[in-house]
Picture 1 (cartoon, rainbow, N blue to C red):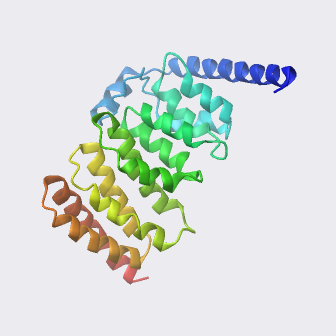
Picture 2: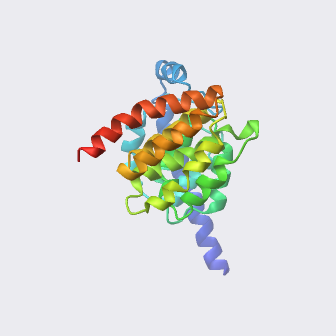
Length: 247
């Protein structure tokens, strides 16, 4: 890289860092202890600074900075780390510039279910690596990786909704993975496993039948997590099956 290009890149990085700091300063002015308390009642308890700024407000801020990857990275890297800044990083990132390395690094830093799901729904699922990472992350079993594992199933669920042109075969191949992990009784994991199974089944009548059959196989595992996942999925998928059959 030439000295000129290196200097230009450093200037752009500094500008993005300055903008990120300015945005975080604005977000801090919206700090709401009442909202923080309410979020914590819903299990949003990040290790980072938490301001209680709503996702609706963050979306408004993000509209002015769509697909600004440099800003997204600066918001994520802001020190000290701020929960809402990281949510905003997911809303402003450019999925065409996201790398596998970034996805892995961010996933390792997930510390609440909302940052996990927002990153998957708004950024990661649009990348060419989404299915690859869904399969990889779903196999993570270390205690520290609970949100990495959840991210695998969050990706499956959101891809089932948004990957309209993907073949049934792609989603059929995910069902055995869902069954494989259905014994994980960690709350944030089993809920995501259930979510992925239900969303795959809602795509169309064929996948609904396959998901119902998989839910019955999961029920036969006869563990507490598997019984809950299967019971909830069967209740909702059987209703979806009736709706799909009437189309």
